Image (tube, rainbow, N blue to C red):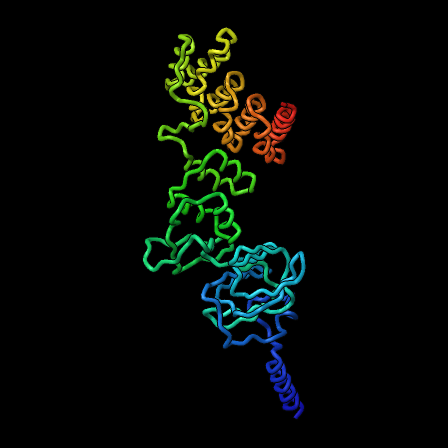
Amino acid sequence: MKSVTNFIRLLVLTSLFISVGFWPVVGADSNDLSSATTGKSDVNAPTTTNSYNVIMKDGTVLVGGIQIKEVKFIASYGPIEVNLNDVITFNDGFLTLNDGTKLKGTFVDGNLGLKTTRGQMNLPFASITSISIPSASASQVSTATATSSSIPSLGNGANLTGKEVESFSKMLTVEDIKELIGASVKSDAIQTQIENSQSKYSPQDFVAAQQANIDPAIIKCMKSHSDADPSGNHPTPGIKTATIITDPAVEKLCEQLEQDNPGKVKAALNKLRDKKLKDNASEAVPKVLPCLANSKPDVVREACRTLAIIGNQDAVPALLPLLTNERPDIVREACRTLANIGNKDTISSLEPLLTNLDHGIRDEAYKAIAKLRAKS
């Protein structure tokens, strides 16, 4: 008789829990069950046409359409009502909306209704760390039904199985890349889009990418799409590649620079710094610039040293990419050269190096900036 009574009590309690919506939500962190179990979502409410990736605190990744409703978001400058249909991403406390608005803050305690292929879920905002549209950047990536390959998996661990995208119809800018990173698109996927779009990047783009702390692998991919000419030489504004060389000694050394022998190239670069050549050595600058892209690090360093003596501000754009070189010795040499031939406008390109992990790079960047600031 006692067991029957206990069974009836259990039945009554279960019915009560279900009627008030007090029931665990699949995918919620066990520490957040108290907030996950309160409130009910309307299973008949309309959902977004976009599919979203929702990442929970415990690492769970859920994919589905978000129930459209107005929710309160506490932004830095006050509360605001947000329609969930307008959300592009929510990550690291930043909410991005489809009109370009970007807010810093947090959602008010409540639940996010997510309609997945496995059923309706009611997720507490307090347990959500990220919300994003898998295929964003939304304005530039369009879904397609017939393409040869699908976009790689995203950085949050979700794979876009069955979702395929066309390559970007226009070149990717640094800002586009930053948007993709903000939308949790994986580095490999961004590199694929750079390749497919045949984007081209300038030395200034490389510096901007470094300042934005973009993944070095992406920057390396950008460098493979430099706006250099087919021979690999970086065009430099203000310096004519067909400059007439009037000094026979300088002309002979320039001919040596075009040889395949690294030893002879380095010897020629060294001789161009000879004071006996006086101002005539500057005529060789257009021939020295290609040496900055040489596959031999010691040739690149020697070219930097020569430009520090015979170069001028027109050579600065060709030197800027070296600030993101993978070799610390080349970065340090580039800093020294820029300190000699750059101006105050060069400082912004050097400032990111002040936080570099390499002590020698930080030191050379600091000295270069100090020297450039002292110039009138």
